[in-house]
Structures are given as C-alpha cells and as structure tokens.
Amino acid sequence: MTETTGKHITSTVNSMQSQTSSSVHSMASIRPGAFRNACGMFGTGVTVITTRSDGVDYGMTANAFMSISLAPPLIAVSVANTTNMLVRIRQSGRFAVSILEESCEALALHFAGRPDGSVAEPFFDFDDLPGVKDACTVLAAEVEQEVAAGDHVIFVGRVSHIHVDPEKAPLMFHKGRFGKLLSHES
Image (cartoon, rainbow, N blue to C red; front, side, top):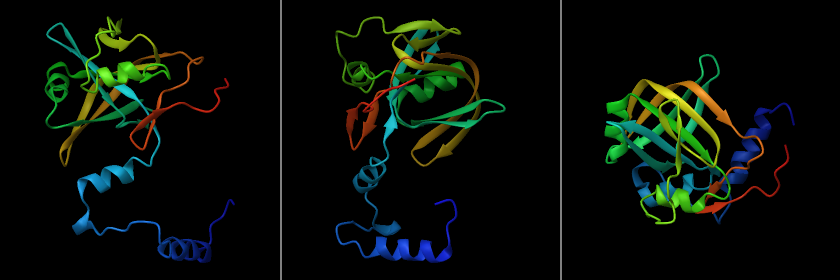
C-alpha cells in the first residue's frame, strides 16, 4: 500500500489496542527491564566501537549505532555514562565503528565484558584507529558533536574513512540473542 488513509490508521490503532496478549505501560510506570525488552524487539546489527587513547586500543560492543547523514557523512554511537569508553572517546576525539561479521559472536561477547582468551589481536590499524579484522564494515570518525541523553552520551562523528567487505553478512541481535540472516546474497 503506497497511501495511508486516516481510516486505515484508526482501524490499525483500534486493532492494536484490542490485543490482549500485549503489555501496555504508561510513561510513569515504565520499568527499565520492560523498556529494554520492548527495544529488544528491534533487530539490529552488532558493532564494536573502538578508539585509541595514549597509544592504547579500547573497544566495547554496542548496537546503539546509526547513520545520520550522507552529506556530510555522519554517524552516531550511544555510550553509557558509566563506561570507560566515554572517557576514552572524549580524550581521543575520534572513534571507529566495526560492524561485526556473522561469525564474530565470541568477539562481541569479549568486548561486552565477557573476556575470551581465544580472542587474540582482533584489531588492524585503520586511519590510526583500531578496526576489527573480521568486520563487514569499518568506519573511522572524528567527533563532531556530543549530546547528553539520559544515562548515555551520543557521539556524532564525521566519517573520514570507510572499509567495506560486501561478501560478508552481519551478526544480528534480537530479543537478547545473536543470530544470522537467513540468506545472504550480493
């Protein structure tokens, strides 16, 4: 359907309101766990956000990444106020986003705070930033803007370099679980 009418929207809303298996929360009663579960219904790719500060490479797993603008090329990442990565990105003024390939679940867990001894030397040098070797895509960016947003900070970055491997399929994340695309065709 290419056109939506007011009648269609109203009937869809009424239909959604009448569903008995759904859970409805008002803003005053939204619990963090319920909010996390609701947002977890959105399937995303998995990234490792990296930076280099004082000659040391740092990385953290995140799915809070998005492209913002094509001209100029801008991306955004969301980093919790409590993470070391927040301080490191502020120190360096730069970050990279590596979109993980479907076989990188162990790497995603490693940078999510579950260290894995089998993850050795995961980075390559990319525009003087650490990029993940087996990533589908790596984007290097200069911090252009920092936005306080609740218990997170959103870094808007101007992309300076891009590396893409179009033969690779991304690691996916949905409802707290990793997954893969059903088919991957170029």
